[in-house]
Length: 61
Image 1 (cartoon, one colour):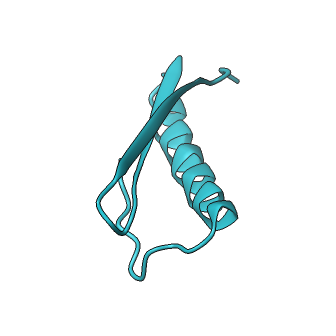
Image 2 (cartoon, rainbow, N blue to C red):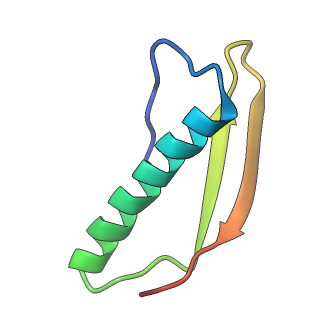
């Protein structure tokens, strides 16, 4: 899943809010199919084109 934000976000807390919404959407889609994610990779591209990513574990409900 991805989301291109226009205009780009200028604060980390706003990016975290968008990431949480995307994760919730993904979780809902998986859950509706009886599935669950065991890990999620989150990446971000800055306005200057720099890439950043990290891995984080999720918990199944």
